Length: 281
Image (cartoon, rainbow, N blue to C red; front, side, top):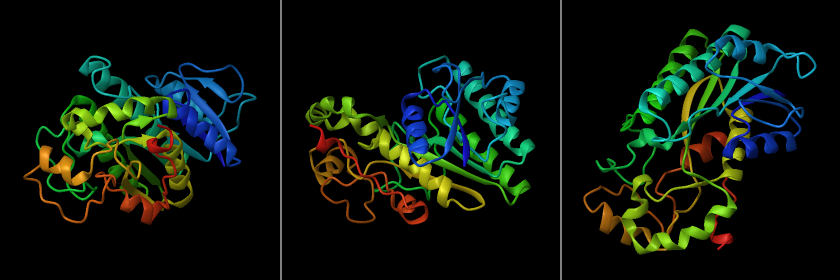
């Protein structure tokens, strides 16, 4: 396919672009910064005219696309003011989704966020392991936008039953150079309780994007995307007893298995994380 990736110059975006190109797709990177040529088009997602024009076709770069991967955004809470985060992320996502709708593109995969699950869990999760079955619990403006983006997608696929929009609720994206810090987390179980000790290797995040492009059907669906293990060496039973003692445990947690359930992504998308920080430290 010919695939446009917004935010293809970002931490996860670079890995996604490389993965999709390695799989044989033609990829166009739509971002504010990037390397001239090599499928890069400078686009400000806040400007709808730029967005729809760049997706429709750019001179010798491409003549229209088959699918969209939307990663371009302020990537976390607290990096900009709340109003700047809201305007940038909400408007950018609407522009990308609406351009796809106008141009007849039927496949969209985009970055939602683990934050909609209730991070930083000052109010504990309703049960463990955490999954997609309970209602969104945004606790920041960044997370609120992610929730609203999912609601936007729900309505767009209702209007167009052939449209496929997949929200990937990525956990904290990590690359191999980030793993040296992980052993220090064991000293304080609460230092990483804010996302239930989760993470996702960027290479596995890219795999999730590829699987969603291949396997997601029409309509809207949401998936938690996390590594198969936690960031901790300490066992789950010990962590949960210390930090979430009152939270119901609905199935066996394993020794170090992720507490952000990836069962749905495994079953529906064929997601199969291959990378662990334990292989690098």
